[in-house]
Amino acid sequence: MIEIKTRQDMAKVMFNIIEPLKKYYSHTKSWLNLGATSAHYPDTAAWMEGFSRPLWALGAYFSDGSTDEEWEDIYVKGIISGTDRESFEYWEDNVPFDQKLVEMAAISYALLLSGDKILGRMTDEQKDNLFSWLSQIKSDWCHKCNWQFFNILVKVLLKKNAREYDETDMEKSLDFIEKCYLGDGWYGDGDVNAPVDYYVAFAIHFYSLVYATFMKDEDKERCERYIERAMEFGKNFAYWFDENGRAIPYGRSQTYRFAQASFYSACVMAKVEPLPLGVMKGIILRHLEYWLSKPIFDHDGVLTIGYEYPNLTMAESYNAPGSPYWGLKIFACLTRGTDDEFWETEALPLPEMDKIKIFEPAKIMVQRCDSGNAVLFPIGLELGHVHVHMEEKYSKFAYSSKYGFSVMHSPVNFHEAAPDSVLSFEIDGHIFIRRTIKKGNVVDGKLVSEWSPFVGIQVQTEIIPTKNGHIRKHIIESGYDCVAYDSGFAMKVGEDSCKVKCKYGNGEVMVLRVDPNTNVINPKTDIPTVKYSIEKGRNIIETEVCY
Image (cartoon, rainbow, N blue to C red):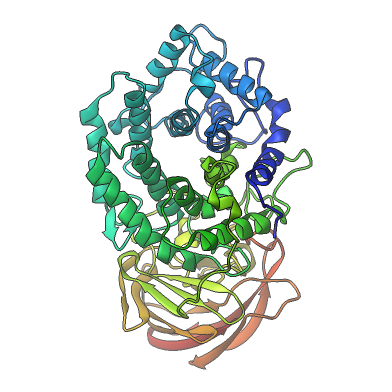
């Protein structure tokens, strides 16, 4: 485990991560250009994103009065320049769904926490420029998802600084967040068929705890409700981590990496304890240790886009070079001062957990294996294709903290499609997988879904967990003859820890080598597979996967 005994130790880890950024700030510091790859938004917005994201850590560090003159100078100068219309590096006016609206949340968070550390060094005119620029945000300009909290956090900052803000518009965003609540501490990242993923933890709950911290006097009832939900969620969310500190890679935005555990750091910040303080500390430290042991930095020490190694294949269109620094949210625990009990508390292991845990509002089941592997079984994707690789990130049968998941290079032939942990169909040389489900639910300890990979093929699938694996039962109604592959997890080349076997049907067991850089954990992988011949009409097949 990382030798973190004190707040200074944690701060040192944080500064080691952001120190390599210093040479990449622009002349007046308001832009941070970390690479040549691009996102769907303008490059200037990407540079502004790069500038803002270290504030997720620095704001927490400055919160107890800690100082670092060089970093303070960078961010005072950058904010002044970025919000000055006469500056060459002005961040420009915002438009609906602008990426800069996202980054307003990081700025607001840091300014709420740091008090006068930054604002105290600005003139009245410079503060007016800043608050005027932030005031452009409105609920209708934010996507109907966790983005609504960006509007909320900005307006909390405006309120706390006695600035004018549209309270009705803030309530509109708060009402939307309420519509996303599913029960038992779980939210969907949207109000209709939205996925339940890490955005529930490192966005919605994270921001709700920030809100509860700063609005407890003005909005007591809502803040208490947010804390109650965080308490309930925090007991359940621990299932998404294994004993080695690994989280289960699942869903989009995996390039944010150690943001996965930032919910527990936000709990530490807000003094909310869904788990004992030492257990949360253990999750945070083991998670950091895991990530810092991986090749996730480039030769200059800058975080790369990818998961356990640099990998643009798995990235979303909104992943710019500075995007991975969203992971700095994990340093929210730095809000606890030097003498706080958190730093004296012993880091504890995970508590004893059920081998199988069902989260009914989320339609998710999690399995804890004797090997330490944590496996997540989702019911399947109900929302249509919104981001790249949605099918691979949400619609596989199982997701593992040990094996990760794979994304397609192309749908042409098996080795380019790399369809791990899913039933795929080969038709006319193309591979088709489960995309969205028609319906699905958790029934009697098993996940049942109905889906279609291709026009003319209907599938009903049952997933039944076993002690160290699971069984898949498929009823397939096919309009033509074809081939199907029921595959286990993608393993590092040379390993044989995941095995598959045919329990029913005409299956042939094989191990298939797939394209490099398709898996998010291992760059070279083999996929254990059962190959089935599917005939026109009704087919029943059954596969067992052991890991």
